Length: 234
Image 1 (cartoon, rainbow, N blue to C red):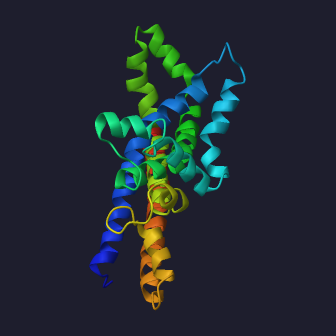
Image 2 (image 1 turned 135 degrees about the vertical axis):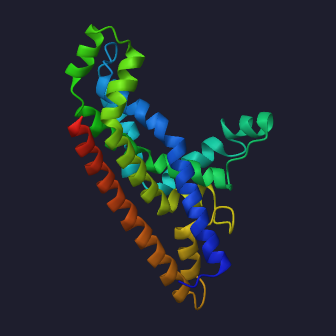
Image 3 (image 1 turned 90 degrees about the vertical axis):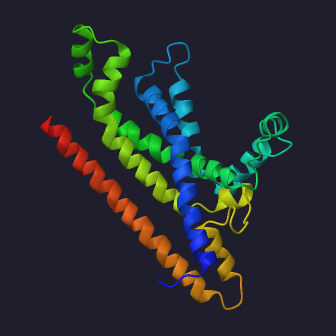
């Protein structure tokens, strides 16, 4: 497919932002999934339900609302963005890093859900047996829990990457639509549809977006099935 340098730039930036978003959200998502499945919440029983609702909030509210909330928090005058800029010179708003943050927030529930499903299929008896053999909490997690929940982690990461390629509302609200900086594939498609004679550009970019999304979703399913087969042979 013959793409212009600007179109290739949008494709490259989309892949970069999606990859950064997964790297940013993967470890916290695993931690939250562990807390939701294994946490006891003895002193505040409703805490599990409140945390679960908070985690899945980006799936049910408009992405523009998430982008606006990030703008209020991480803007140059926000309670987090202000100190980051004043003390460390870090600016997230209207940057590639900001686009990755917005994408990570939107795709975070997808990783948590996949990891949680994988963790719920881990037999607690295996960990109990390891405990009786003298394995500590870290050893049990690294040698038993983590390998068994690996299919969920990998599937969640790939699914979140695919979703990140298509994020629009939160990115344009928080990071704007800056060519070469924050203009990902969806934003480039939007720009093309608003430009006279841009239908051909929009069609090419939309085709690339659909192809990438479909390939990644198939890859996530393939990884999950393959990992389940391999773990079933152990």
